[in-house]
Image 1 (tube, helix red, strand yellow):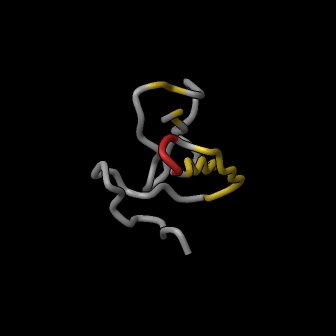
Image 2 (tube, helix red, strand yellow; image 1 turned 90 degrees about the vertical axis):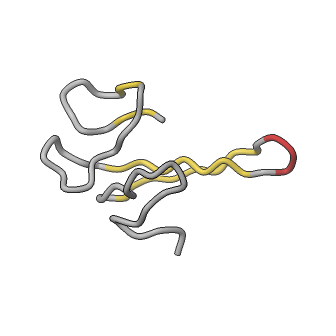
Length: 63
């Protein structure tokens, strides 16, 4: 298990609910970047937070 809904992430945000698709990419210095999609509506108790909106009509954000 990577994380559970409501867990605190390193940036202080809560892990969003409604986990969906996921992909892993090669990062810098031998790291792995994990991208996980969340199918949340605008009234989610655990919304996705971020600076760049992916969908202006939903709670989803592109990090």
